[in-house]
Image (tube, rainbow, N blue to C red; front, side, top):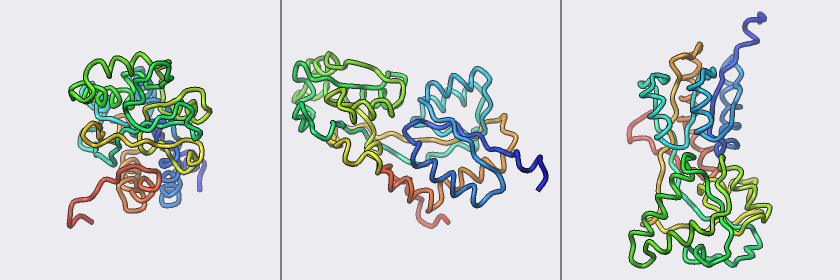
Length: 250
């Protein structure tokens, strides 16, 4: 293998909440292809800004459609390659000891409860606000409930991983995260409190290839691994909602 071959590298920009699952999928990919994968894990708004400012990436793995759509409209993405590869929902997470005794949505409005959310630009922050809007529209909770919850938010984080780690450390009483954020590594540190479906926001996670990619064939092969049964099984293991293939698809 020549030197030029050895240096081939696929650069994947990826939402931070996908770190565990995508690292495993990257290993499968490297075993199949003669190219290494280098991940840049960060909040999707930060990844978008980096791309807009000229950073090189072959593939973008996003936690919502908003930022992918924006990059598509700005001419950074090969639109034909964009696919939804998984879905997610919002959950409340609490430290394992649950010092504030949070058992459901109503407890988030109790004065003095310390809550973490993502920034409104961050996918999980955007989805959490959608949940609060649905609650505000329901007479059982109402607009005052939403205001009380927002009044308890002590910090807005720029990655979902920061929300999760601060909750795990017991720095706050609760946080809004994805159901997938109670990953295998986090079991025993945080507890997930489900949000009823009628209030929940289910998010589509898209992946796409950048037009600047020097390795479009290898990049497509990466997406193929992500969409494969093995890739979907890993996402399932990490708590994501697998993208069910249409009947009859290979």
